[in-house]
Length: 484
Ligand code: NAP
Ligand code: MG
Image 1 (tube, protein in one colour):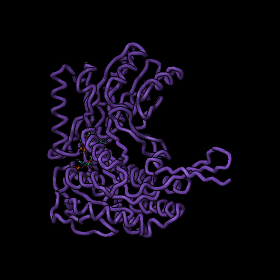
Image 2 (tube, rainbow, N blue to C red; image 1 turned 120 degrees about the vertical axis):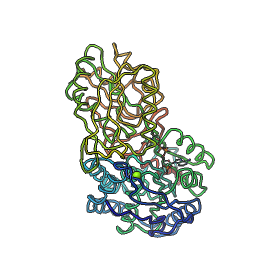
Image 3 (cartoon, protein in one colour; image 1 turned 135 degrees about the horizontal axis):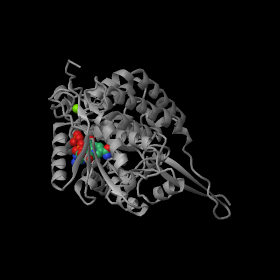
Image 4 (cartoon, rainbow, N blue to C red; image 1 turned 45 degrees about the horizontal axis):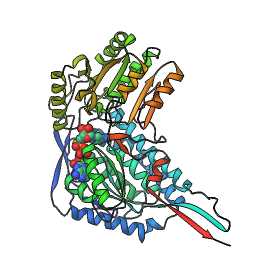
């Protein structure tokens, strides 16, 4: 993209309006390090206006009057609208985040799928009839909570919009989205397309801006009934405090340090491909990245030799080069990763294998060489903390018990993979690892749209994706009717 994308403002009641700040933020393309656009710097006053629009849409506007079936149709149809704009959206996402075009295209397909899935689900959320005392009829029913806030990160801006907003809309809530300042073009474009696709005014509002301004104003707003947050554990704590002050619920998806456990009896060729793919996908900037590989010692040499061979073929490049991975999101993030790796090397970790940065990748872009470290102390930062880059920590184990202990040896618990030809062992280990999603003989980096996803421990709480997400965005009522 050669022309600079101008700031559009804040999207409220189906139209762009100027931000009350009158200020803008420059958008940088990670692949080149160059400015490619500007966004408005939304303020607390803009958040007030967006929450008021959502409240009106929910309580008095056309949105709140739709039946569940009508909402479902709107969502399903919007999935098709996304498909029609797929190439445009993929290009925007790739420019904004630096990811390879094939990844950006897959992301857009997933966004479309979220709307299709939740469109189909909208009129299928129903309660129970509960046996009670004679003379009573007791029913449970789900209602929307009202106005939901969606604070989403920069790693998968489109997918995060789809995952969070589609489920909230399917339940009948009106939404206010604060996308990440570092990549928010696709959420803004999706909001615009929602209006074109016929969503009533106020159902989808998007206020771009800084986390500590627009984000903090949204999460602490008295007019918000629920917060869906994906991002860092540190900000997750702030969100939880803000939610507590207003006595509202929140889902927190805060990343992980997800292990892949490879036993000697596994299909090693399949495991090699999957382990490499799960850490380089999106340049390792995936909450569910498989960032640790735990390998049974008796196959350590063979497995690591094959994995190193695979890693040596991995290349980073621009979106248009469409290689295995792109750059990381920002100069700051690249610097943070570099500092962490320097500390890891001081602590004794050693480089086992590296991929490459393709010759044609601009030197001004934020490329990080995919790297496997070994001799990683399980107590060290590299073994325990999220790098959010294409960096894999490899550690050996001698027994099933040790594998489980290592797998559970971080504060996180988002996803884990178990590779073994022994079905009983794979299930036994999967049952003992504390994580929200467990893969056996595969690893889906987050899994499908249909599969409940979320964390344990410091990875957060609540579930997104699948049918479960609908209940997070709904409030259950119990109706007790005395009829005799
Ligand atoms: P972050 O600060 O937690 O950002 C996530 C979202 O929260 C963004 O929309 C951000 O807005 C917003 N935010 C920031 N401060 C806020 C506040 N005080 N109140 C309300 N909202 C606020 O994450 P980051 O700084 O971009 O990344 C740091 C680390 O977080 C990464 O290195 C990675 O380890 C982790 N992370 C995890 C995920 C995940 O998928 N689990 C995603 C992203 C990052 P702005 O960006 O506009 O400030
Ligand atoms: Mg950007």
